[in-house]
Image (cartoon, rainbow, N blue to C red; front, side, top):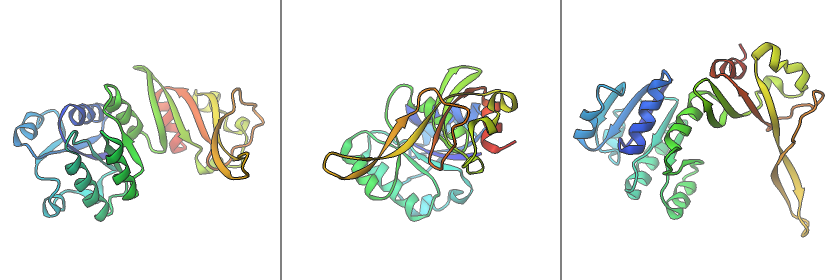
Length: 228
């Protein structure tokens, strides 16, 4: 898969290197020529340009990427402007690094829904999340095993856990299912809440919107998600 990462500071460069190590193509973008030049041999492609310029951003292969990640950092104005341009250019998936509640509110007003925070492990976790389609959250337990939250694939909706045959067919362990449950408050209002099922019976039927918590090797998790 191909990704564009805006901002090659500590977060952006770490994310880019992690995605490259996972076998993906990364276009790293930064306004500073020295950063683009610094990583030109370790990131697939690097470009020095002003991501707040519509003409400059239009030069990028935006239609050919799986996602654009805005990891610019402390310049909140540049993050917001870059995200606005990407939204205007109909980039299918935009992930923004946010550093303040106000910045997140502005981005949410643009209908941007995926965010990452400037924690030490956030670049690695985002890379693992982007690595496989449909993944909501990803945790690397060891070099060879991951714990994934993944939306139940459409082809399995209406089937039971027993039908999936996860252990034999995919060598995966289902830890639990997180279900979206409609709850009524004491005031009579209804709202959706996430409910962890605990130990799951083999006879449990899967519904659209269910989240599976799976443990296994990356190649086996990928086979399950892609239906191979």
